[in-house]
Length: 151
Image (cartoon, rainbow, N blue to C red; front, side, top):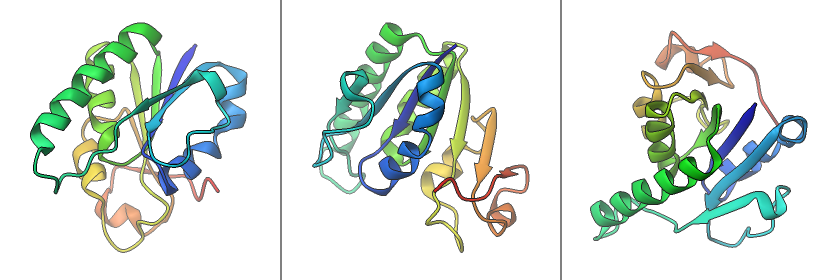
């Protein structure tokens, strides 16, 4: 089984790095953003994409380019499963992965206790398994699976 782990930089990358013991058991790779944490546990099995911010002036073009990059990486890696902790840069990978018949596991951010993230809202109907780390998350995502913290 091939697993592609996808997370933006910062806290999302820290969260997905907690799943590294799972990555070691399978053929796996990581996709994250450029931005200060270029050294990851995955080493040369890491792909970097530009950081994206939905408030930037060229967001639509940058987001389209991210879809193109996501397609190239997914075509190369051919994952059976994509696991994501968010944020928005992960969405193109999950959409394209789903079209390529990969199973999608989305884990809502540990930081989301009192509200749902934008990425969570986008992913709730796309993920094959949608997980929350706080029981309070079930209020926003009643069909989610409560898994507790992955930290």
